[in-house]
Length: 405
Image: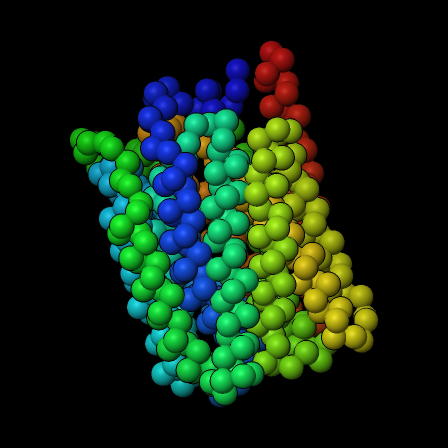
């Protein structure tokens, strides 16, 4: 019996159609143009503020991702109970797209933290119901492809955003603060596409509102073990900001740092759909292990002392491959082990685990890099990655033994 059949006694919802996936992909496309115009320059912006350090950057990024993922479980439960995905998705995108231009008035790291947290609250509100809506738009056999296509459109925006930020600064003379303001335009376009083209999933209001009951319902079977694997990996999986910092250390000018970020997003985009399709064919767990292995490689590359700015582009490219595989396949894997009627809740629990783990990862990595050295960062992330790969091997072995029994 397949894992998704074990996980759910509820009937599968009637698919809405692949057009919904495409529409949500374009919403993410325009939002990512807006977001990545900002985030490609944000690490350098923070370091240029009074009191801005690597450790401060780690704290800001860690807290931002923690609140992001905490909000995902809350919005996931609401989405499952009220059966209204689109409203929450719209609120989330609206909050983020209004918040990001406020980076332009930030004068201290605390100001940046407030804006960053507001933006991540918006992302947290929208993500679980959006992922549930994607999963309900297609049949189970096309789940990996659906998330791969959505991720590809999302990341095309993430490529264009940093490229536009660099172009605006290099050729139009805009400052970082100007770029933050301009980011509102593509954000507004995302909201228009969402309102006009994304369809709501049909469904009535569920009776009762029991958050703990819903969470307990998804924490059954093999899902908790999967969360353990993801959590162990994520406590060492630092985010892209530290790749950008390494690029700066290698001598890449500030105006070109967004291009480094664009390289991350190019390889992310290139691998997302193939990774999703491959996961549909050979198993999502196996492809996820491949993604973890690529992260391990990118971490080791940080340690190699190559005094050439072009080496920063290589690190970024490998890191982007990891992100494209892991983010696509992990999201496609969740429905395999969650009840179909509680998918948004399951996504919320998954994102909560990932968010708390990322909080640990970014704070620890920032502190190690600031107060010890880069070698300590690499040792820490290698240890967590190898442990996660061992745990995933055990997870797969147990799954085979259960199937054979």
